[in-house]
Length: 117
Length: 114
Image 1 (tube, chains in turn green, purple):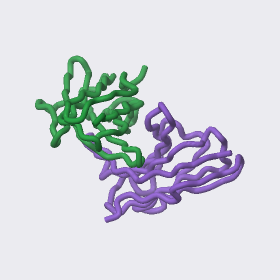
Image 2 (cartoon, chains in turn blue, red):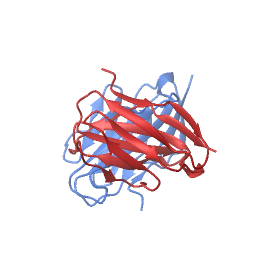
Image 3 (cartoon, chains in turn brown, cyan):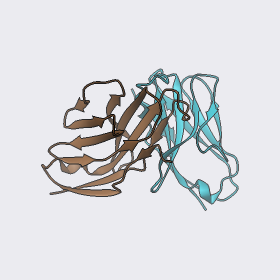
């Protein structure tokens, strides 16, 4: 079974609107971390936001927020007020403390976001 | 600080040729990683090094070897390249392997094996 599932291969959003990118995860660990990375067309991987499994509040970083629903095992990324520069691939990733991934990051397959002017 | 640097940026090999991808970081990080990225597959871990002098296999290690030369440098070697190794390769580093560990990525190496 996939550890990280991103069900939206591609999405479109109108400039200045908000968009939610879905991510569900599978782990039996109680202690884990969730990450979102952005990969623009230039290819580099840019860290956006982190959520720990014990964090009571949803993480926020500027226009990025993470909608963390632990019981549903979902960690959706919300981008507010989309900009043209947000067009990119977005990857959700997880690190488990004790799981079979040996503490390494496990990445989803990504969602390609396109922002329309 | 340059962060994580990788050389070369692009490479074309013929089947059976060998090459080494170089990676260096100047952030004094203990842990370093090599990933490959294929279309529709996300990033998959090839090898990692938790600290200087140690290396371990990741999800897809077959056909690769690594060397943690020192704390700064972590190289990936393809001894006999195959077309299936055509991919984009990323090196990354992190302070350590704690739960919250932002990984910093290099710019990637685009490798084509003919």
